[in-house]
Image (cartoon, rainbow, N blue to C red; front, side):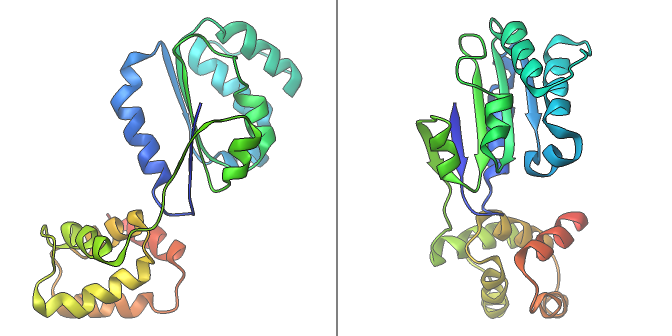
Length: 213
């Protein structure tokens, strides 16, 4: 198992998706659970277990309890080489009931993203990678590459670029989203857009810009 941890918006899911795209073809079956934090309370862990089994077995099974689901997963998938990604896990029971140690066949890969590194350690995961904020000079390069296609902004955009970077707070995904959103727009439009972001937490900015990309 591999754990990827970091703050919200740092790009954990983007990394997991990149890994998925690169290696998914190597496995008998694949399953990518997005937003486990949100989906667990709504559909429950039993529903997630059913979805997991349906993905790999191609048939719907009747499961009455979480414990029954664990038994079926271990029995049905223990010889299958699978790729399972659990995105945005926030409780240990989500891991205990969806991806126990030794449940899947040889060569399987389970990748977990979370904001809580302690949760990964409690589950016995040894391969843990932290995703961290970038330094100021890296932020300028990442933002500029998305906004202008170069490592630095034009001189007349420098002050506005620094404002945009401040909103992103060093988060790589935020820098990429904001840069892409502002690409090809004139200075006056930059000013209007950035003025509208004043006082908003990054999560709201990300939601608004992502919908427009």
